[in-house]
Structures are given as C-alpha cells and as structure tokens.
Amino acid sequence: MMGGTSDSTTPWRWSPPPSHKIARVDHSEDAAALLRALANPVRLRLITALEGGPRCVHELVDELEVSQPLISQHLRVLRGARLLDTERRGREVAYSLADHHVSHIVADALAHVAEPPPDVA
Image 1 (cartoon, one colour):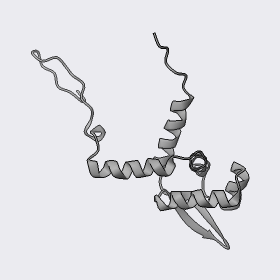
Image 2 (cartoon, rainbow, N blue to C red; image 1 turned 30 degrees about the horizontal axis):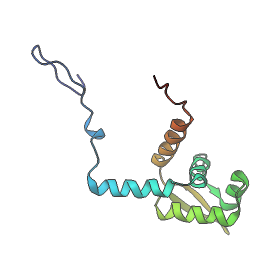
Image 3 (cartoon, rainbow, N blue to C red; image 1 turned 120 degrees about the horizontal axis):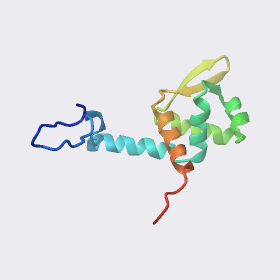
C-alpha cells in the first residue's frame, strides 16, 4: 500500500511520498530566486515560446511582438537564473530551455489562473 500503513488496529492515513516533503531551507532560497526570475509576463511568454524549441532573438521578437531590447533584457535575466541555454548559429544566438522543469511550472501557473474561482458559500 503506497504512502501509508494499515493494520486491524490503526486506521489508514495518507502520507506524501518522500519526494513531496518540504524542501530544506537552503533550497527554498533557490526556489524563491527562480520564481522571482519568472515573475514577469514577458518572461512567462518567453518560456512558453521556447517550449517549442530553440529560437533566435529576432524570432522571439516576431512571435511575442515585443521590442528587441526588451526581449534581450528578459533573456539576460532568464540566462542569469540558469533557465536557458544558448547555441551559436552563425552570427546569431539561439536560446533554448535548459530543462523542461521550468516550463511545467509556467504551464501550471497559467492553468491555475485560468481556472474559475471556487464558489464561495
């Protein structure tokens, strides 16, 4: 039986698997820094765009309809947070997600805010 124990004298109680335990304090600071790096609508849109694969700055400018200096500024923040990788393509640099953990965080956040509020009784 996953997550709990049961015998004839103790009722079964759910307990989370070890991977869901509260993060240690040192990891909480890092997680907070990651969330701060994502805390901008343009950066959320950049992460979502890069889910589709690597893009150069001009492609992101066209796709997001945001100015090149603004795109570059936000890419710098995301790179500083180690959320993006880069690859040279001749004279251009292609940006891609360092891993897909962050895209799941963004997708979950967007899904959460799109849900209707619960009915208050």
